[in-house]
Length: 380
Ligand code: MG
Image (cartoon, rainbow, N blue to C red; front, side, top):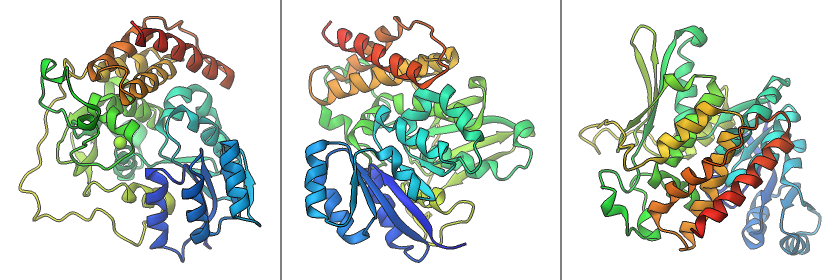
């Protein structure tokens, strides 16, 4: 096998930067052919000087002009979704629902998708699933938990009948062990202080509410076809066990490594091989024990909201994810308190119309409608 051509959507975000860090150490195996961003012109110009991609996608118009002027000879386009054309694998590191076109087009073109953008699969599961049947279209999850499950499942060649349960681990976030009352006055700064993972602001707030885990439950259901009754969340504060699979004979297989997103990125880019540079190697001297406990769903009600939306199915996960994006953005810009995030999502879900999507327009409609209700809830 020759060199793997990689395109990175969301290249200046947390996942994008860590993808380039991995490739930097494996340059004989990978070539960066495309970079995609929303509007961070300066940052992508820097990246392009080092990586020399043949195409750069820039969504924002004035940023696009800036990039084109700075990099004569490089094709500068508007749409990140077309990055898949010149690549063998596309890393989708776009934040939120905006990542959907990249997910769809990569699979449609029969390319491998290294999926860090969980929202696209969660919101649009019913329209993304059929695309996975296209020859060459394969999703390798970059989310650490799903990457772990993907690895654990490789221990069975009859996973469809041998898996009893997926056990998703959760760090519990910065507010683990806190009471509802004590969380009334938390600041944005406190919510952004994740104890074990370094990630972008949206997902870090999602971790503090346990919505990230809730979204990951739906993501696991979509990726592995496991029913919600067979997915369980286990709080594990050290974030060393990244998830586990329990088989029908009671055996549990787990994947362990120190929390480092470059490992799941490297796994997805190298699959079916193993990456040859190690990230997150366990230093057994640094911790004396591994703890596990049940999640506090009373205080962190977002987890139950996600299970409920997942079980309803159809467009309910799209509504959940959209309402969450609106609420998290409002929290980050200071217009609502942390405790209001779950309330806004819950209230938005009361308006869900039960639509079952069959085409992408149904998903876009559901997303827009849910955002409208969520924005109305913000001002209440
Ligand atoms: Mg995760």
